[in-house]
Length: 162
Image (cartoon, rainbow, N blue to C red; front, side):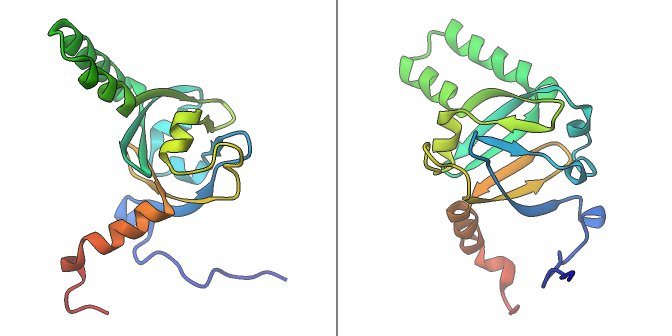
């Protein structure tokens, strides 16, 4: 027996430029990037590519094509080092940015620091849902807690609406 989803996006991804769904990391710390995500983020379809992973806030990270932003981030770090920024500033900078890759199997493997940043247990990251938003230039991954907090953070968007 075939079932249908009980809801669908308010605006189709083809019109909004945003694709959202729930996903999960497997037991080996990998997230599969289905072909439908490449309909929005075309750079994903290139296959074996390097990533810039931005750990922007606890429970939220974004994946970017390295060729678009990676060298800029490395240059800024070099500038900070040349300016002899304090060690804490350099540590925080390195905490925010990580390297990754998408293999030909369209999977990205997260290291322990990234899994921990999402608030998932290191021993058993599988089975925990994450919200994924696919944009043209990036893929955002949010923990359930971060997504729920974001919904509450902008009540002015919903004034006079149910």
